Image (tube, rainbow, N blue to C red):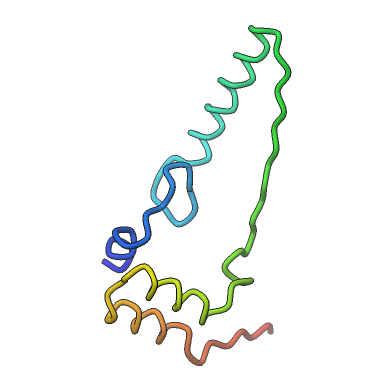
Amino acid sequence: ILTARLAKACPIHPRQRGFMKSPGCSENFRLLQLLIRSAKRQHRKLGVVFVDIAKAFGTVSHQHIITGLKQKGVDPHIINLITNMYKNIHTRIG
């Protein structure tokens, strides 16, 4: 429910694959294969860049996320739920 409501206020780009039920990796891999084949067929150069934004959310402050949700007009109840998820979070390595 939370994901569906957030998706309405904060739409995700169709190429985004994180946190979604979709065949993202295989779909993007097929797209890359098509681009490579097309470039070879047309004898054109092709540059490919892979960007790994691992743990991107770990680098964004919780307050910044909450502020962004407010600016997007997300329902205050949803914002409150997310705010509560961020309270008193601890990591223990044992």
